[in-house]
Image (cartoon, rainbow, N blue to C red; front, side):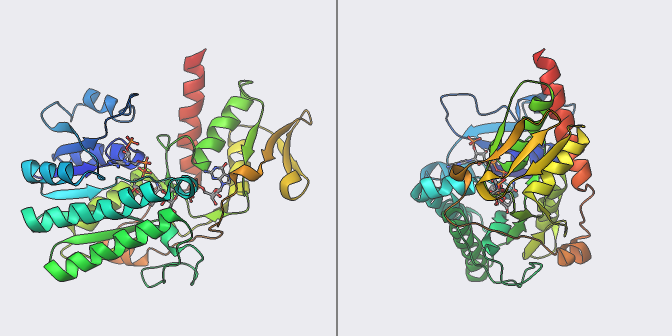
Amino acid sequence: MKKALIFGVTGQDGSYLSRLLLKKKYIVHGVIRRSSSINTRRIDDIYQEPFAQKKNFILHFGDVTDGTSVNDLIYKINPTEIYNLAAQSHVAVSFNIPEYTTNADALGALRILDSIVKINPKIKYYQAGSSEMFGKVQTFPQNESTPFYPRSPYAVSKVYAHWITVNYRESYNIFASNGILFNHESPLRGETFVTKKIVKALCRIKNNKQKKLYLGNIYAKRDWGHAQDYVLAMWKILQYKKPDDWVISTGKQYSVKQFINLVAKKIRLKIFWKGKGLNEKAYSEKNEPIVEIKKRYFRPAEVDNLKGSSQKAKKILKWKPSKDINDLIHDMTEYELNEISNEK
Ligand code: NAP
Ligand code: GDD
């Protein structure tokens, strides 16, 4: 029976990946951080699933900034596969806490890799890399050959994690692979990422529970996929016959403003835009401003334009996204509207 160890199990991807692996009959060990408030909201309901029990979904305290806990867990569990999803994953926040972000996102990867080499070099390793590493993009669309040009402490840390994964693979002959995943979203997305922020706010505005949504740069373009599809890619990456680096994306790109318009259309919230720059606003049918731009949500350096090409994963791993932007918006708005109706 395969044993997986997931660092970052309480996050969006950790939750979807746990469900996928449990369905595939893995024993799943997940690492949670001590927190003064509950941080297991995304995984608590896994125990209600027919495929999960206390004995095949096992949680442990640990932290990737604490080498002793990383080493101890890998030694005790001796898993078949490790998925390193643990990160301070908010790009804007990484400018506020750059040192912590580097410790968790860059050195966290090194700690796990080093334990694998020392404890059991047969353990397979997945590194959660990011399209943010392409940053100020050097080719269009971006694929495995596109040079990195990171634009935030988060992205610089992920570039380190990428290269230390390659280095340990080449130096110690371990099965260590990088996924270079473009933005992926879901109903379980963290509340401060732009898609979730937009979907939640517009659904609440539609239901008279909120008046306004404040955003930053609405002209940034992203290649948004669905987290459910992307965790399948992570698993496929570790099942391939050899370790490698893989871009995972949809190949389609939308601006933040286009995303707002698609969500508004989906929930039948009529909006129209007026103004320019910081004065640009979206108005409701009643001519009330409901989306406004605030300088505080702009980043010191922005990533303007991401669009991936995952031809390699399509050809070799036989992976392609099953859900498009409309399916994603459907899932996210359904979830949010249901949350609102449960409040009533
Ligand atoms: P997320 O929702 O922010 O989840 C991050 C997870 O890491 C959470 O479980 C968090 O725990 C945990 N974590 C944070 N710091 C930690 C530490 N010091 N020690 C142990 N665990 C720690 O992120 P996600 O969207 O699921 O993304 C998963 C991974 O993929 C991240 O590494 C992210 O950078 C990367 N990635 C994400 C995307 C995307 O679009 N979602 C794209 C490319 C790459 P708490 O719940 O306690 O905070
Ligand atoms: N979060 C946020 N909040 N972003 C905003 C806002 C706002 O109010 N207004 C505009 N944006 C813009 C950001 O400036 C950025 O250009 C874009 O919306 C997307 O921002 P996020 O949703 O925060 O995602 P991200 O692209 O910065 O990073 C996510 O994707 C990466 C993969 O490319 C994160 O999940 C990273 O962890 C991941 O690596």
